[in-house]
Image 1 (cartoon, rainbow, N blue to C red):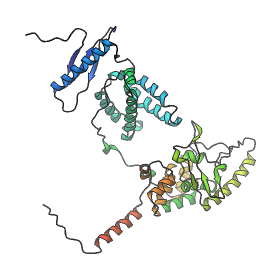
Image 2: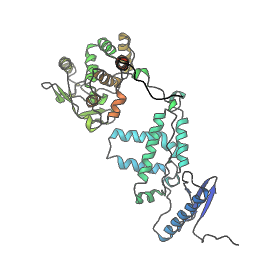
Image 3: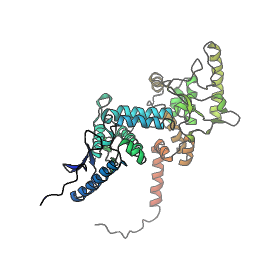
Image 4: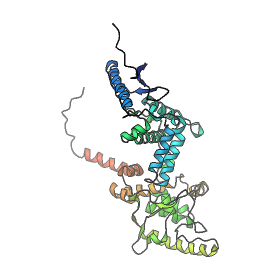
Length: 407
């Protein structure tokens, strides 16, 4: 009894280990295409092969009828360039810079030359493993958070390549290669944030401010009380300060690569109350700035900036350098912290006063409360007080008898 053979030109199926590959020759092509066909979880080989036969038949009939195109030679690098060009007008310049850096540093070196049409779930899992084994500066292994970001960027690229039938055909994708099972990340490798990033307590904040030189103190006071990001602080202008109402309108952001731009998010653009103590400090600062302006009149650029350089230009991104930081913290006898930690310090101290998380979110101008949750520290003193209250509440009266049987 002869075995039924597939008609000439209808392709073939190759089995390798426990995976099947569809092989067919597009019309006019010199070489045949070999395409991985994904297997469903817990699928038997018989059912798997039947699905592969049906898919192969659909592909070859579509190619013959001209309603389907063969997988293309376009690579992940081509996909990345196309993706970046498409989103460039939709996101901020610094966001595009982050996307481009992630792709060029992590995705392109491993997958850049791979055909989009040939990408499989196994390739994506192998890429994840390569990220987690990658060595970075100091001989350390890459942080899991960085690997997550790279994987998320790759996922965005693939979603872009599958956005509609025409797009799928352009990139040659016939199935979603992203693994259906959720990735297991080795979270035990994630170390807690260094102590330098823990917000200052009230006592530490007072000590730090007392050790600051007079012209520098108002800068840190502004960041803490208004809870500004560094770019928002550098972009502060006198015209946005309403002294009569005691309000500063956060409107701009400044970065060294893009200059003055809009704020990080729409919710970041908002009025913030300025306490009278800070208003007095800003008035004194304006007097000092007028004297500096006279001394450097030849080089002064009038950009209306509240905290400019000696020539009126925006402060550089490293104005809070290690030299300045070390001199202040050494004098104060406190641990060094990053500039962004002062924004977290203001929020944490504010919430320790008893304000709600929603009010803290409003003060930080966060779009999502989950971001606020990551910012605010619960100080041990307040936490101990709450636990003491819980213990007293539980033990005030007789402990009720439980009917639950254990053992």
